Image (cartoon, rainbow, N blue to C red):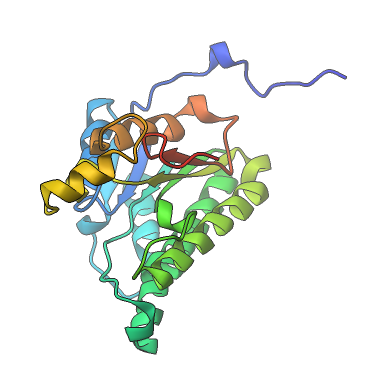
Length: 235
C-alpha cells in the first residue's frame, strides 16, 4: 500500500512569516511571550484586545478575518479565573468559570475552524492547564472540569477538520516560573523537587512550543496535547 503525502516534509516551509494569526489572551499568562515570538518570526498578528467586545465570543474571530483578509492560525490563552473550593462556589460562579474556560474558547475555535476548512489550511493551538488532565489540585473543580472538556473538544474538532488541512492541538502547562513568584521559598523548593528536570518552566518555552504547532511543519500533528511540565506529568 502506497501512502501519498500532500507535500513531502522537505518541501514544507517551517516559516510563519506573513502567516495571519489571531492571538487571544495576549496580555496574560504566556500570551506576551507568544506575541513576541510570533513577531520575531515575521507573522502578521492581531490580538483580541484590538477589537471592541460585543458579548459574542466569536465576534473577535470574524473581525480578525475581516482585518487580515483571512486566518491561518488561531492561538488561545484563556484568562485567569478566581478559583475556590467547590463546596463554597455558587452556581453562578461555576457557570462563569465554564463559560470562560470552555464555552467561549470552544465557540472561537469552531468559528476559526469553519473558515480554515473552507480555505483548506489552518492551525489552532489552545493553551490548557495540567489540572484539566490530572485534576488533582484542591479548589479548581469547575476550572479543571472545563479544561478537561476543552481537551476532549479539541480532539473531536481535530478529527472532524483533519481532512480539510486543519490541525488542532493543545499545550498543557504546569509550574512555570511566573506562577511561583508569590510563593514562599520553602514551597518553591518543595515543588521543584517534584519536577524531574529540577526547575520551573519559562513562558518563552511555551511560546516555542506554540510556534511549532502553529507552523506548516506540524501538518502531521493533530488532536495532541503537549505537556510542558518538566517531566512531572507524562502520558
